[in-house]
Image (cartoon, rainbow, N blue to C red):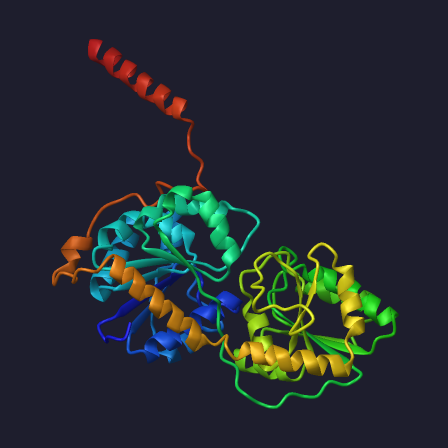
Length: 423
């Protein structure tokens, strides 16, 4: 990935949002551009978001493929959408197409992926370890077009291998996320425990509405604490109301969305990062907390890398189904213990950098290229990539008639043709 001829195209639903995956993507774009590769980012669902300007400043060219989503759902004529995709692919001539967990695009554009694969390494990514395996089943449609899969945790790789035992030859590699956090002094821990939450305000997965009860319990036990909640989402009003009913508004501050730079400042001024999730991939907020010495107190989800998360050494882990124990953990955190955990957390975070993550991707790409060397794109790429296909054909969200109904309609059509011919 060192040669200037490298042209990377990253495809994502809404790449400029405020989640951890979007931050990961931005970090990867920055590192790729700094490695003298040209980078394009295509949004297939939404081209808006608070990180959009940072993507522009990173040196990437942004592509608006948002018409794809409507056409995929048959709400828009698909011909112009296909033509737009083909025109951009012929212009860019990518050497790497990274499908950033973008199932709908990958399903709909599978014929195009197969067509350009002679000239382009096709890489898929796993960023979440969901208990619902549908996101893995979606891969069945386009798995034959992939060169490799990169995953942010080993657990999802193991699940994938069990799901697709016949795909043992497909390269799948665990590559942990990395972050960039400046080296600066931390605010010392005091008797007032300073808690922090960074993420989407949703109940599904994040369980944000469980937080007020936990905070009410620690207040009832007499622990002096404050909390800052960073992020936005559909549960914000419910969360604020629940905090008010428990008389916690003087201790808890809801900031809404903050820029990455503002969030980094908060890590250095808080003792603990709280994560209540039922499942995760490799949480970017937790990585940022490690790097800043803000002690992660997280649920012990299956995807955790046990070499990184060492309970009682650099973090504290709470059983996923016993959130009430989170309060016990908070109660046990003295200033002295926080200082010890913080120093070890920061030491852990030193190795989990965006540069190291990119280096592992570069090494993975070199392996994939050795297995399947690329051909040079033809000079007249437009004629090669120009093809017709139905991008809704394998859409799992669309109702499909029962096969017997189709046979019945076909038989009835033949009968009508016969009757009409006798008249």
